[in-house]
Image (cartoon, rainbow, N blue to C red):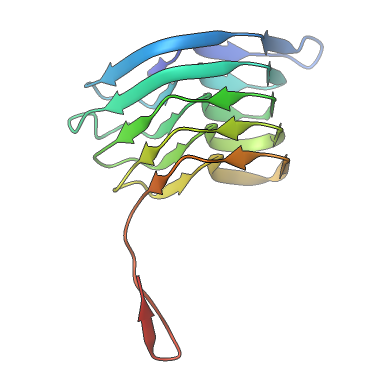
Length: 171
């Protein structure tokens, strides 16, 4: 598996929590190869990790031929186990063209923990993503504790879809 970020992979343990705190990163990621998890700050965080008071100003551009990319986000690509994100901000634009599963301003995919008092100010373009969100693209488990006091200001461009309610079509 391939994980891209300022920190590619962070793992905590029950007795020892991994703490990522007070980091500010700027730059550009132009991803043209197959990858699984891409984020400005942490590609993957696993088991008892806290990401706190950190900011990403990394513009992420996943190019068309990186179509096997799964998770793309400003702060965290994928959270496995308990991962807490608190008071983090993303200002880097995310352009994820091609086929992707999950795209989020703060986190792409999480399964336990929470996201508190964080903000996405960046625009997200992911026209082929399965799930796209300003804060989180996909929550994958009943152990996730919640999304509390967050803010999304950036625009979100995802798939266009059409629904019909009482005979009226909406797009």
